[in-house]
Amino acid sequence: MVILNALVQGVLLGGLFAMAALGLSIAFGILRVVNLAHGEIMTVGAYLAAVALSTLGVNVWLSLIVVVPLLGVVGYWVQRLLLQRALSLGELAPLLVTFGIAIIIPNALIELFTTNKQAIPTGDLAVRSVQLAEGLRIGVLPLLTMLVAVLLIAGTQLFLARTRSGRYMRAAADDSETLRLMGVDHRRVYAYAMGLAFAIAALGGVFFGMRQGGVTPFDGQLLVLFAFEAVIIGGLGSLWGTLAGGIVLGVAQTLAGVVSPELPLLVGNLVFLAVLVLRPTGIVRSKVVV
Amino acid sequence: MTALLAAESISAGYGDSRAVADLSFALEPGEVLALVGANGAGKSTLLRVLAGAHRPSAGRVLLHGEDVTHVRDFERNRLGVCLVPEGRRLFASLTVRENLEVGAGSRRDGRWTVDTVVDALPMLGDLLGRNASQLSGGQQQAVAIGRGLMSNPEVLLLDEVSLGLAPIVIDELYASLAAVRGGGLGIVLVEQDLERTVAVADRLVCMLEGHAVLSGTPASLSRQAITDAYFGHEVTPW
Image (tube, rainbow over all chains, first blue to last red; front, side, top):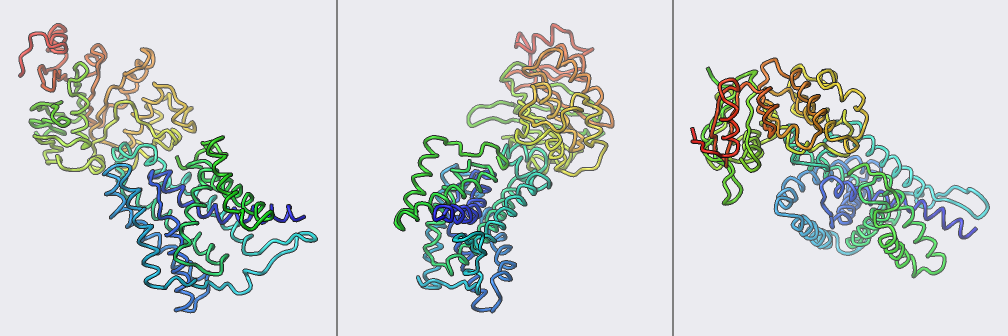
């Protein structure tokens, strides 16, 4: 029962990892930008939610209405003003720009909020659970996180497949120069894609903060690692692959945690390494974004 | 009368290498103007200049008499100039229908819709749901032409329509081009196949090492003159 419990918890943890990985997958799949600041964008989302909670007194769900679109707009302008210029300089420049952002954000957060954890209270949601069987309970928040992750991936896939903007994003991923020849300014398409990636990162960051009970300036470093691992395990550019990758990573970490509380991170990294060596294209072959 | 599209003393190149040198021509509405020449004559570079995808080092591009030289490629498409690039360059992860729909990115009004494109290019009829990466070369070229038409252009720039295709497929494509003509659509056709070019073009411009060395209607030019110009045998720049 302990193993089964760990398996179920691991699967649900995978929902959070998938949410973290989705924005990263979009940024890479469409823009070919490896966003090293993705984890920090998630922490900014969580911080904005924490600030909204503490200053405006709104609950965490209401804060999402502001935080998610706000980070989406920020993503749009970061792409237009910073990353687009960097893209024109070569493949390395955007990497360096996002690396710079990843350094600036935690330091700015420390200046503004100190290193103390900023609480994101969720009432009794964090401790509420549902009993499935004797000795097997699942938390409502992890379940909700998985549900949101699945809906988010399905929604993103529908958006990319069925809308004009989604088609432009996929076309831009294939050949941005030809897209321009069809009368579409690829820079705007890229900016919308990055806005979408930032908005999803913000949502993932808030869910992460809810799970952890708060957020610190350093959380982004681990988040971006988990996001990368989930993307690579799942398969670059595959949306449902991010969910599969997240679940594999979550299960690996949770099962390792049964053996020793020291092991989850190490085992997660080893699984990632094994996939990289044995199946570098990831476990899901179908590609949606690219 | 103002030409639909005009190139005035265009020079263009890549770094120190000059691909097009002081070249001029004008395209009238409804006309098919063919640019012929051997590999490296500068034909594709000239098309890219006309489409706004390559900046000329000198000269002007005029659309309805308006200077559009510095209008960017996506904006030039919205003005009615569409390039069907060499190598087709379809969006490989999109279906044929999606490729056509992306072609309508400029949202210009006109007669071309997915349905009318399929009418003009019948080989696309059964392919709309198929992924572009699964198509043969001829099918890809048909999609590329259809995608170009979807922007309802006034000027269609066709680069190497027959490149790498079987003769029977080329026949079908050129038969479709006949259906595409009309409605004042001007076509600039780059082609290495002289026979087909002479058959379809209203006017020929023969290019050699970036220069226009011969120009005229197919009826006014002897086969020998065209061949000489094509290969650079005793030609004088005009």
